[in-house]
Amino acid sequence: MIRKTRINLLTISIVLICIGIVMIYSSSSIYAAEKYHDSFYFLKRHLVFLIIGLLFTFLAMLIDYRWLRKHAKKLLWVSFFLLILVLIPGLGREVAGARRWFRFKFISFQPSELANLALIIYIADFICRKQDKIKSLVTGLIPPVCVLGAFCALILLEPDLGTTIALASVVLIMLFVAGVRGRYILSLILCSLPAVYFLIFSVPYRKARILSFLNPWLDPKGTGFQIIQSQIAIGSGGFFGLGLGHSKQKLFYLPAAHTDFIFSIIGEELGLFGTLGVIALFIIFIQQGLKIIKNAQDKFGYFLALGLILMISLKAIVNIGVSCGVFPTKGLPLPFISYGGSSLIFDMVSLGILINIARTGEYP
Image (cartoon, rainbow, N blue to C red):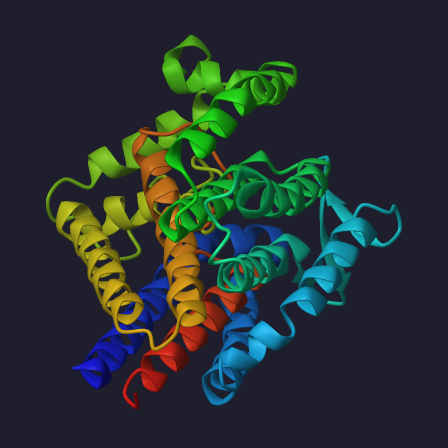
């Protein structure tokens, strides 16, 4: 049964990756030809990231996942140090006012993706070490929340509110499942709401995003433009779509068509059946992930798998919700499908770790 779960998870991931390859070329070829005089520009880079991701995936599958627990604190410190370095002018690459990337020739690396993985590993290890004291406020909640707060502060300085909220959500759910009292977590969330309100409404572009989410037609050519074009793309696809490669919104109407809004292009070209197919694949992915969590042979594997599934699921839900206008615009890519080097690589590493946990579960 576990072997079947492992195969199913790997198969679904391969299908999602193949959909991503096709849709990245379809959504980016005209833009790439216009800007870089090479219609394969983004596809070629994506394939390079995919090859790197495959290498790390096989490595994650080969190394016993319990090795990660021994080095959880080291990984945490390395990722924390990289989050500091990326903020230093000259080291971190600034794009559109955000300093989130290291640039190595044609390859970009986003340290916040490593931080997500490192923090999930650390929290899983922390829960195992403190399992007898996890219900205590002082020893069970405050230490991991302090670590989470330090990471969130650095990610907010990039700035990247979307990743911060996603990471905080995953950590808090892991702690709740581990046994931290619900009233403690609820109190923490309520106390953080004023800070979230300030972070949103004190920054003009974030405030504009919220207002455009509530009513994009207030500024259809400005802040509401992206949401409107995304909904036009999905709506114009109908049931069966306009046909692969026949999207009109990718013709310089919908910004970030191959990254944050690739789901909208799927809806336009492949229609309702295409989008429902992608959603169904993610639902099956989550279902298989839950089986891996259930059959994990130790507590560390249980919570590590939980954190990884939560992160991938949350990114998928938010990305699809943003494309449909259910959530405000956030820069979270669609796992395995969107163009994006660091995100794809670490999603694949997460897949490798999940398969590792599942494989270990075959041999109690």
